[in-house]
Amino acid sequence: MTADIQASQANHRLSEEEFRHYRAQGFLVRESQFDTPEVNSLVSAVEAAAATALARSEDLENARPYVLDGKRFVDLDHITVQFEPPPFDPAIKVIEPVCELHPRLDTLLDDPRLTDPIRGILGSEAIGLWTNKLNLKRPRAGSGFGWHQDSPYWIHDCEHVDLLPNVMVVLDAASRVNGCFEVIRGSHREGCLPGTDDGTQLGGFYTDPRRFDLASAVALEVPAGSLVFFDPHIVHGSAPNTSDQPRRALVITYQPADHPALKSRRIHNIR
Ligand SMILES: O=C(O)CCC(=O)C(=O)O
Image (cartoon, rainbow, N blue to C red; front, top):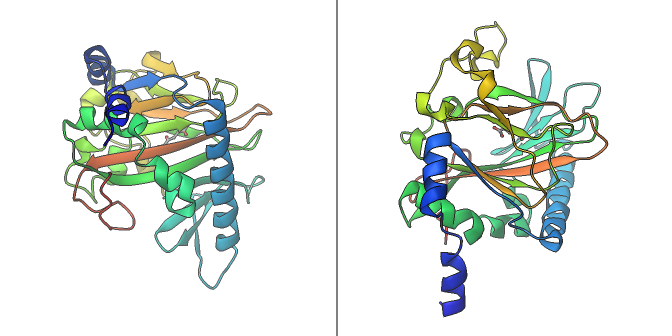
């Protein structure tokens, strides 16, 4: 490895102050880490991946469709495509995992701007991939994400749920009006919280609103190309996109090396 590469990688490590912030608050923002040409190339890649997922989900010989709480999902082997509820179906809401659908997204997984801070958070040089997803909030069609933690989704498939840090790659300037990502500051310190008990199929995955304080919500209005690192236990969500602008984001989740990924169950260690 050349000295230049070593230096540029070293530059992406968290400072002590950033690390303390992440530990105390459960999240950390690094603004504008990707420049406009890089963001444009990632946007082209996610749109190509979304087109592939849409085409494959219409191939009924290989796609497995199902409905939960009135929302349509399609499984393509281990990839799940979630559609927006009517009347916006067939707009895609989420694809998980997504990065294997495009080579540019696959290389993003090893980008030191993502992985150096994650190595610091995990306290380990040897890291692997847990999962990754694309959240597409189309203009005036993108629904919100209710307040939830990720850890209760994962706890049945993973014995180290505390060690699954996320990084969101923000692909469009995000504001309250297009449904920016929001977190409940400090809520990660509570561990896995109980879900709601509203009788719906997915209700148990939304955090009981009596167990966190909405007054601690932080709306992360950030420029395109920003990164948001967040703890697997932090309560988070976002509002619908009521604007004419898209609000697209990738969320990549890492783990210590040599463990299988959530959905493929394959080991994918990071370079
Ligand atoms: O994209 C968002 O605004 C929310 C994402 C989210 O909650 C998740 O992916 O778990």
